Length: 320
Length: 320
Image (cartoon, rainbow over all chains, first blue to last red; front, side):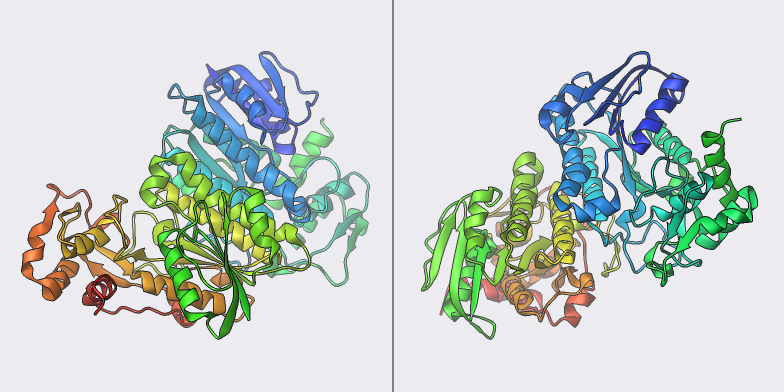
């Protein structure tokens, strides 16, 4: 029996995680006996033994209501994306850092030796340019964005509260998610999703990067599977695993477009509008991670090749 | 002409920095035309064109009064020491992180293209065990204390506000300061000062470490000289130099005690009470840093040998 809370349950990852848990009725081997969903706004997600706590998670009153029922596992997947965190400076710190700090502080103040597993969605955005060709777990993160800074600060405070024994935290540096569902986004890595989703929906997509741009990708299903795996790791999490890069697939724009053509026809490529010159070149994105600690801990990866990203999107969008 | 503010002006480093600036009447080549001293409590430090802003620097109203006069250089040297930050958990975050965040936020909101040099006293405490024998600037800081976590978070937010062009920040990872003036302290590295100061004052000192413990030390005068050097660097500071380890001297307890005996007599060693067994062994402290970025930028170091630490203390304590 496990009780679970999701902070950011209306977001892309949070909603997908919530639906997965409700469908399975379990968190790994444990039956799910309570699910608290929290976000600024309620979504239409409902389930047995599911209830909503709406409000700003940076606001102590909101987070305290969530902590009051002492969930065994808290997923913190509330975030504003890289583009927004940099252009709306205060909002970025508020959503990406203050909500994390409020969460660990509310847990600390709960007392009763309450020490839940906290699974936080961090990001490979903690690494900034210049990027080594292969980034292993010894490479020092040096963010070049406010988003990456906020994620790094969140990792640091979660590690400290964990070291003190207040919480058992783990931060997953998730790959860039593709194919993101919903509308085309204009975040700096959003085009990796746009160039697949939009043509498959019969819409035009802007490609601001050259063909040789290589990046580290995972599907939304992989991200959810990785978060659930983190929740189920035997604890407490070792200090060197409190923040770790997740497995992903290293793919170029060229290979992604070839996979799109292979699965859905060459014609779709005509729906892609390249910026001239490209805004992004190969030096602008981290290409490949070793993710050695996460692989040793058995973190899953549901894709192998570029076509798997196309197929995964098609399965969900056009179910048989 | 330079106007300067010191946040934490009543602390060990802040007071020493303030006295140095007032005595010289200059910040490097620039004449000092205004000096704002800020702390929770005023000290007896006074000088020409010097005035106090008292209050909590994490409180926006206080920091805003300081920023209102648009100092060219702001030194942020307010901190609570490692021992206190870990035992008084909330106070540590408040003093070591919230005051830094309030400072950069007040600078950002000041507008008018105001972009001062911000020199922040960080610490080698951002590195945690296990320590490589030599820590170069590529080694990833992983704090094993709340103090180190707060310093790392402060470095991250200062780097981000600097990247955004709101401030021109630089964080000095200062060595452990010896000989600290004043009372014996019980912080985890305080004994490096206690075993010199206390015997020289005719008092007993507790030594909780084995003879072979090696650590990275600098005098208060070196720390002040390094802070002033940072204030005078041609700007803007490059991204890779926004947080950097400062030069220091790598010394063992054994060598420090031998220097004490050499300068003040073997008898003094009888005033040292060793804990049995030692609380700290060689694995508990970082022994040696390359500090290659700081050396390339010309950061000063006023000591070479263990006896220099003894002599420096004696010169101040018993002026000729």
